[in-house]
Image (cartoon, rainbow, N blue to C red; front, side, top):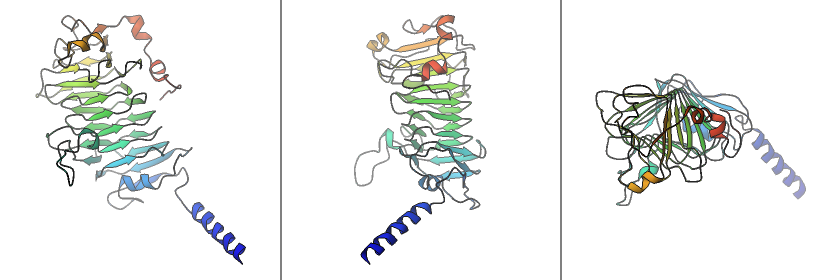
Length: 322
């Protein structure tokens, strides 16, 4: 009798495991109007199987989704696909100076994200990620920690610290994306390639604040990107080093007239001029002249620039061709 009960219990567990209808590569549909299986993106992520070996698409219909989203480290191979980049929006409004409940302490930069991606092999496509907090401090829209992350035709909206590439040694690829912000709005230690992106400065400040570790060969590479502004900005630096060995390269880019002649800033520390790796090649536009660039930045030769490819930049730990 006891053996029979154990067998029945095991059968029940097995049946329960098999009953998860989401353990397959089918597409999940999210819609605020109730026409999908889920009304929130987080709910669709929650049902995905850990360590999937297949590609799982979460299709997000047009709408505004006010939620704080985490793609956890145990999820792989997920694609979050928006119906339309302009009108499929995930938004939240945390900023660094919001007081944490029960304390006198502000929440700080790294808790302010709208979406945080901890898993590997994650793709976002045709979607807007926004932090619409008032300008009262750092406010991250996208926070990444996973490796081999791809962003295609996405919009990242915010003010200070819009995009945080948060883990050294991870590789990110941004294709045809739009990124806007005020100060240091692309920052962090990851290796990231930006291809065909539009980068908009909303105020006089700094575009990038890389913190590339000394031992990592490449940090941020911008290729065939456009740096623009509205009427708000006319004195913008390409970057300043958050850490001494910051690596940032702009090549084949169109730099608007809002980019200052000096190009780069040392963050008030002369020592950074000895270590920061700030590079340019074949840029055009009113802000591209190298005549008055800081002496500690460098223009690449044609041969040097030709050697910097996605395969070279992303071949750090294993080959990856996004």
